[in-house]
Amino acid sequence: MKKKQKRIQLNIASNKGFTMTDVVIALIIFTIFTGTIGSFMYASYKMNLQTKMSGSAVNYAMEILEDIDKIAYEEVTNGMESKYIQKYAIPSGFRLSIQVSNYKEEDIIKKVKVTVSYELAKNTQDIVIERMKIKEE
Image 1: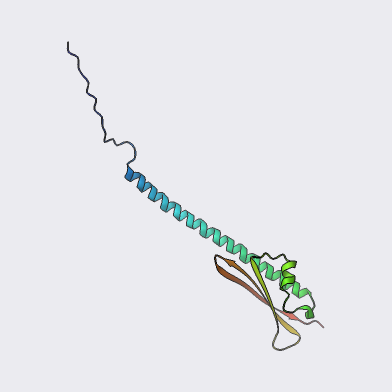
Image 2: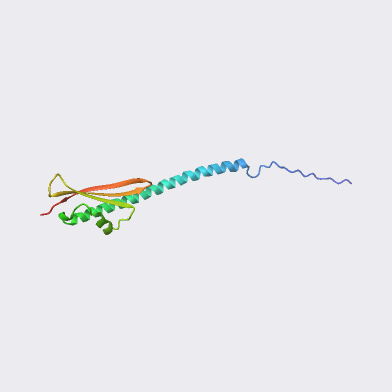
């Protein structure tokens, strides 16, 4: 009686698993997807920050102008910035400028121009609001 010998064949070229090309293509697709999502999130963050900064600047300017409406006509002069920076605790990221001038060379009306500036991404943004202060008699 003869024994049958079994031959074992190894299939080296298998269709199971990933090739190096598959991995590289997957990494390229993942990198493109991640870059797109990352740039979208950065743009969204930047727009959100700009909206917050702009809203704060408008709020500071309006509060200052409302306070100027309450004080006497004679007290409205140039050089009031430090008073309002302290009063409203304006952070150092904002710059305040208040310009007071006579309106049309009359002594009964002053033009008050409040400028609140801030810098975001190396761009300076200015919020400018003007209002008239009328002398009460």
